[in-house]
Every structure is written in C-alpha cells, then in structure tokens.
Length: 168
Image 1 (cartoon, helix red, strand yellow):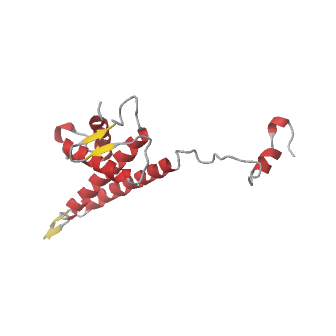
Image 2: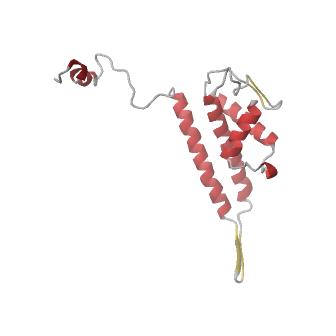
Image 3: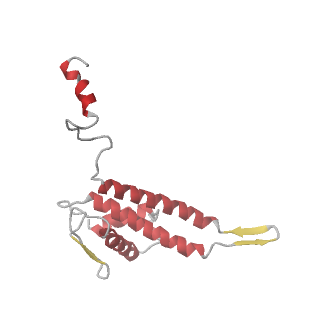
C-alpha cells in the first residue's frame, strides 16, 4: 500500500469520512491535505528521514509507509495535522450556514453544526500538539532519568539499595 492509501485511510477515520459509497471529501483533496500538512510540519519537525514533498505534483518520497523505511512518527504527526486542516476548513465553510429561523411554532436552527465541528477540531489539534511534543521530546518515557553521582536524587537511590540487603 502506498502513502496515499494508508495515510488517506487514517485521515478519513480521523475526520469520520469512512463510508466509501458517499465520501464527503475527494481522494485528491485528502492527498493534497496530507501533502500540505507534511510541508507545514517539515518547518517545525526534524523527522528521521528527509522527505521530498511536492504539493503540485502530488508526490512524497521516500514513501513513509514502505516496510523498509516505515516512519510511524511521520504518519501520526502528518495525519493528525491533515485532519486539523480539513476540519478547520469545514468549520469556516459551515459557519456561513449557521442560521436560526423561526416562523410561528416552527423553527430551524443550524448553529450547533459548527459547535460540533469546533469540538472535533479542538480535540484533533490537541492530539496533534501532544504527539508533536512527544516526538520532539524524543518519545521518552516519563519518569526515566539518568542519575549521576552528583544528581540530587542519587543519594537516596544509593542509600536505599535493596540489592545489598540493608537500608541506611
């Protein structure tokens, strides 16, 4: 599977556009959004691989989904960023349709549509920022540290060594 297939499927699931019989977004729009997200993110992130991103030509090389050079961090960061871009554009489009009409006992209220999209947008963008921060931090596990002989906590570790059989 190429990057278009795998990353496109991930993005479609993130934005809840999975019914293949009636996609809300065309395949070319999804692919273009992925490439735009890759281009924008390449300014903020130094990925393990150097990627050549051509938005106009709709190409990305090397393929981040290739089994030999699979880059899971790239996939996660770019797919979340692409989902943020797509949902953000939908909020702008739908905000023009946010109307409320009352005619006697009947009423139509379309103001809540943008509110739901805004919640999804906020959630996706927070996930993107979290994954990006985790990647920049080296994907380290919280709580792990290197203690040297002069580190503030090293005395406690050294004095409470259970392997020696005694606690000081």
